[in-house]
Image (tube, rainbow, N blue to C red; front, side, top):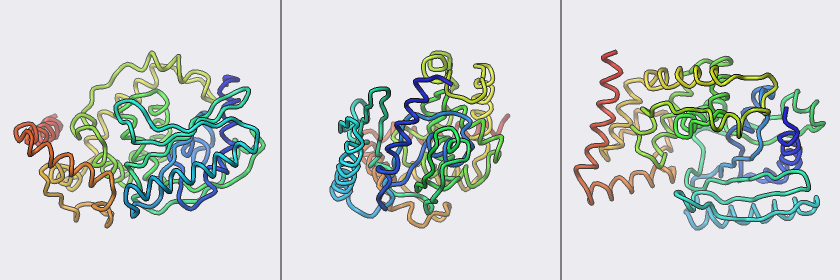
Length: 312
């Protein structure tokens, strides 16, 4: 394992208890998967945070997030680390609020997504896994998303970003659970609230992992993983996941894109109330008013994608 990654993990584990010392936050993403579910098959170097409640309005939610990050910042600074706070930049500006924590040896980012607020299922309190306890001499608990939701949201990231770290996590999902139906259902819930068009994510073409493999993956894993193995998992995911969606999943996504969402097709009673889903519907309504042809084309492309799968 790369020493720089190890130093980053040490810093991350030092600050995580302070970040999650609140009922408002839970952990998601690669750190939750690799350090609290799987027994540390790879290191993870940042902290992805979900705001647990979907009920506060946007302004109230932002206030809660800012207050909790300020609290965490003070606690982390008392450890002697430098902390800066920033809003996300780039295409999705405003989606995240970030802390950047720096020590003399490492830097860790803590990111809160406040568009996809709330969870599909109740959170789970987990202890850090045995291998991480032994390697880093720490032992603490944090709230995380449930297994199906951790991996359902990870599958969206794996199709969208196509980063070697995400593909590696998918490999271990396959090895541990397979592609379970509850994971596919959670994937549909997160896909429905994603900022990109549904068909673009679901039917994305596999991209090369080569550049990020060397720059952001090698040195993270306990056991070496070659690029060809990751490309094989990537190809498997792109083949399997669209085919794993049931008729109910398909119809829910199509109904959402028609602005006629059939909530009864999904098992989450509060799905319609999640801010990311409401935002998706609002944006679709704006698109329909602005460009009815393009609006209808999204449903057509989704239907054509599923039809192509059925012909194979």
